[in-house]
Image 1 (cartoon, each protein chain N blue to C red):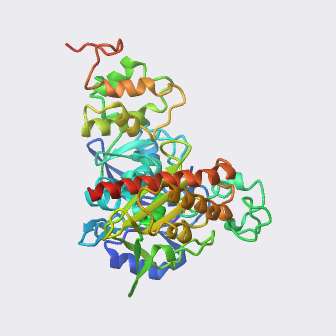
Image 2: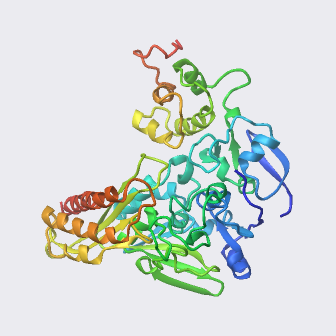
Image 3: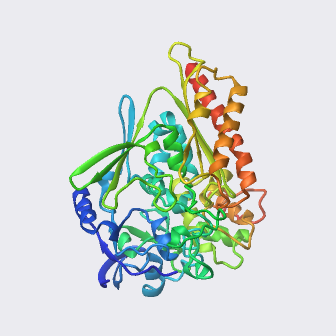
Length: 337
Length: 165
């Protein structure tokens, strides 16, 4: 498959990259590992005039740990995150998510966490070659007026299938975005537009610099379902976080439940999660109720566009949520000793 | 889009080539350097037949721009054999019947070689995980997994392991 033509820039540092972005704006795309961008370009979904390579920006590749945070540079390869002890021990959902992304030979050494979070939304009607799509009218995401995933939909229903974003949202992560002369920090659960065509609240001249994961004695877990154990995107996934109470170590102070691959953004399920506040780590009934509430919420957003059937994916939401909750609860119990 | 001259370090030798920015490393290896061992099958990173090593790590060459590979030590399947003498891993593939049509084989070898350099005596689960990004339509994977497993640890019960003693 051939790539379209483009100009290639290789800034030497972050400042250079920001200058180029400010200059080219919508005409440019950032190139990190290229495992999402180059595929979309080969399929003719994207034809940026300029690619700005991040290959020299080693300053964006790091994992550092503080007393109550872990900071990860956006250009950090997934392979580094997978072997990081701070992440394995204190942000386990992220470790589990990154391990499952793609396969060792595709994503783990070239793929970056920034690229995984910022991957475009997907739909099996849209993510096809030029030739395939030439057979029928363009859909919303492709510049047209129709949605093949949901009949009569007046908007794009493409799905966010990012493992990393689902896990990080469960962890309560924040993103640091930079542009020339400006830096802002945003909660990941406020970063999405809930819209399929441009899913991220991000300007064309902005660059993701860093992900901040707050640490507060909570335990997390991530579960995903996919056709095969590697290569495939998740068809349903869940990230959870359980924070035990300081005074009563077997009681849940705060819970976070995020369901991914079921909507235009990872679904942060506040109500389902808050039903767990005050419950014990052993309360599997409460976990079941929360998991079924998660399914009800997710079902309203999901469409049939990432494989399997909609019914199956919805039915599997409680399964992945319960598995993740039980895992996180066990980890919290082990922590208590 | 302008052509550029770049130098790629492939299998221990520097190669100077003129390329367009939109040429992938796979294109350059096959079309300009005549290293046709690496294959293009899907072109989108999901089959593994283009797998090569950059700085010892297995990567997809169909999704790597040649321009992105300039400072890396690139190794292709052609680097495994020493002239006519196959590497232990390659010989193990031959002995165990792990090659049928041969199209997935270069990619499998590069993924397996990267694993064995890091961990010469892996367990089966680790081998399967290491080649999980390489698809084979012929063999059903069993012989490939055995070939990789038995490279550094020949098994008495395996009739395919050639005795080295």
